[in-house]
Image: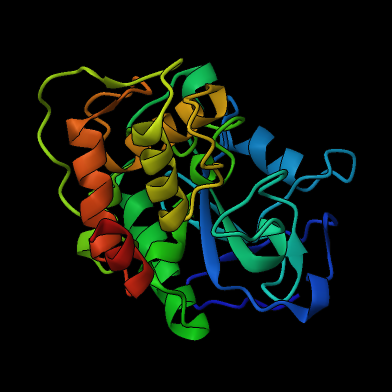
Length: 257
């Protein structure tokens, strides 16, 4: 294996990969945290054939980048996931694991050196593959029922300021009341439709079920982390509408009309 990016300092080939389905070229980046007690155990797990998980890149806390899987191959990082109607996220994406113990082992802020490395790597991938800003996502975005990474402490705004990802300043917090678990009706259906337009995998059923709550939490974790409660309050909905309005897609503007 040879490095795909000039930012790679180490190679540690993982056996956990396969062919991209139907020759699919990657047009997404999915960011993860490792969610293990330390970097060494996480790296070992990603390279263990018994784990059946991997990623293309591994970014340590000091900013050192290791490549595990060639970009041309389908790394096994997203699991059961979906985005924008794409059910095989692994075939459509490049996965980056970012060392952090995560919520289970002492979640903490990401060091500046690490974030600078993530930005550089992402910009390189974006330029080489023509990846759109709104296709740079967190694991929780594509698998909201299962995952919370990279989490509410991940500095998406810093990445956006550097040209990585899609972001708008979140609408300030206000009244916490809003659509919540158990709600039903046209307002819920409209919310689900908006989330689906942005890319989240949620059916416009009109029932605010557990899946919808998980998607709202994932949205808040990425775009409005000041309050992550799964309630679609005015701040959440207005932030979502502003993001859709900023998409390079007239479908979003038509839906908001």
